[in-house]
Length: 435
Image (cartoon, rainbow, N blue to C red):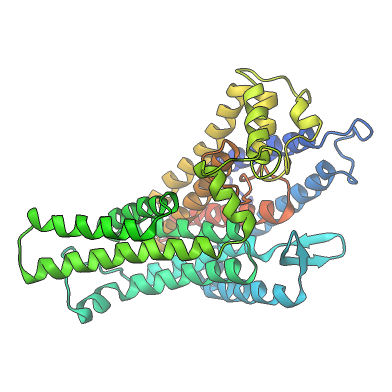
């Protein structure tokens, strides 16, 4: 592929940009279908959501061009600055922001609303890449019990987790935006690419399984007893010595902590959040006119599309507003109903192609910072894709998370655009970096 060094696209990966543009345009067309109004059929009507989305798309185009015009070293130099600024913005919104759906997490500038939590993702990614590229995560391949050894070997890992957890806590606890908060958990995957022991991944998976079990099993005391029995039985298969006893005791304490922590968190959730979890787990009788309404209507809409769909603008579930939030969190219902299985598969393929393309580009970087940032982009996009579609088809609780480049909203579109195009700029600059 020839590259004209006199343009702003010099060195930029054209395939990634083309995929981005295709997703944005398809998203715009689906927003038009989701809120189609026969009295306002002009797709450029700015009084309607599809017209407003076009303005957001124009703004994202300007943002993308500006990012490509700025020197790539700017993003490295001011990584912590972006992080600090967005942390401050996410705190200030509590005092200066506007409350939307019970959450005070929006700044209002005239008719324009900006949600700083969306932009925190690219800032956290920059800060994490900056820290990890300047540090070496020392991973101890053998389990050591001496506290000073653990602190010595995992100090950098701890600091990296702090960078991830701070925005998560601010957005979840202060703003009560659960969906946007848990996205930051995806950054942990980046640590494994940078050398974190797979043992942590195994422990994480086991903790997640135990978390689900703790939600399903209502008798917490019984579960703790079962864990104690399993821990005791472990001595039949491992050497019986002091070290093994300490390891088993620590594992049991950690497991008990997960169970008790899960019970505590569940009991302190908002009523509607508890209901969503109960619906997902099939616990109790689900009222399809209340707590089970969203997911049930979403399944009906997607299922009614069949293999090839009902046709563009022909979706009855969508047209008559049976699906709540059908232009934002449940935009995939419109795709499924009007484009069918083929169209839905095509959208998922495009999203996955973009993610895999980013991973491919990340692996060819000469700079640790660029590689780490690229993986951060990939995991954030994948997390959004998996959770959004998962909650739409009833595999995950409804937590309110947009489909990348598809869902209506300026904050999410601009945030995703910044997240992606910073990496495109870093990749375009890779040949100027000496190994």
